[in-house]
Image (cartoon, rainbow, N blue to C red; front, side):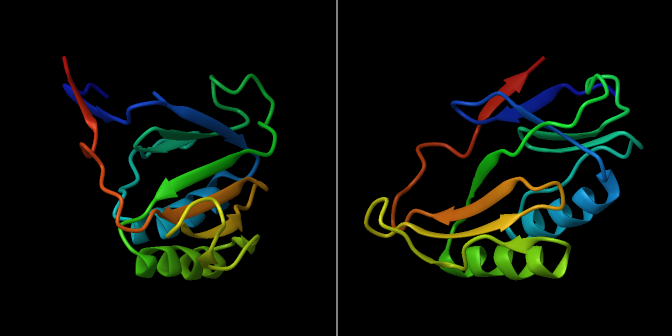
Length: 142
């Protein structure tokens, strides 16, 4: 599949998780990222992606036959309601509670929820209050 344009964040180019149950993880990520307005890409049997996140099965060429360990990923939300929706969607699609939506002491206005995905990764959605991004993404054109 060829692409002529990518959108990437400012710090991390990409993250890859290798999981044993790819269909369960795909259902989970489609649900939680859908609440944040992030589409899922890829229709292959051994992987899918969303923005900078790539999720592969153990038998994918990139995985070398081993699942990754437990990771913590945090996705930005545009509102508290998005965080709440992320949490509800995750619980309804195979996620496990790891911290209900609420304010955290990291900085004023930090509102987050935490779920364990079907592979045991700690997945967070965070709304930083009235903070604003300088740009939604970096556009890379080939």
